[in-house]
Amino acid sequence: MANMDYPGPCPSCAAISGCSTDTQRKSAIKDYCTGLEMELNAWKARMYDTMIQFENASPDNQIKAKESMTMLKSLMLEIAGVLEKLELECPADLSGTETELGAKFSSMREYYSQALAAFSPGWLGG
Image (cartoon, rainbow, N blue to C red; front, side, top):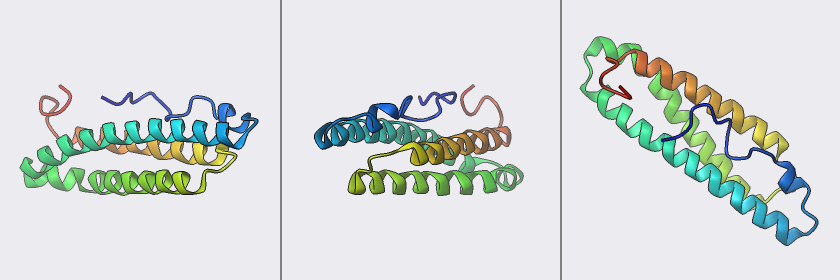
């Protein structure tokens, strides 16, 4: 399960910006992208479980959770897009990207908590 307190896959992007060779930088970015992909996959698994509960929920609970579910799907697609961009461009500096991803993961945690609030606590994570 993804660590909801974890700000993202890169605890210190200095490891990338401090690389002395292009090969080291590409390797560091590959490791970063692997961490990002692992985090995103954990969220996808969580989202799958949530979607099943959403589909089986009462109409009232579906209405309560609909916006959160839509935002979660959107954020996952955005993060996947950032991952693809990183793998193609292999930038030298990830500080802006890390800030963007941290904000997206933070938003995902908020929307996930809102979606869970619409369901019985025993259905998910309980």
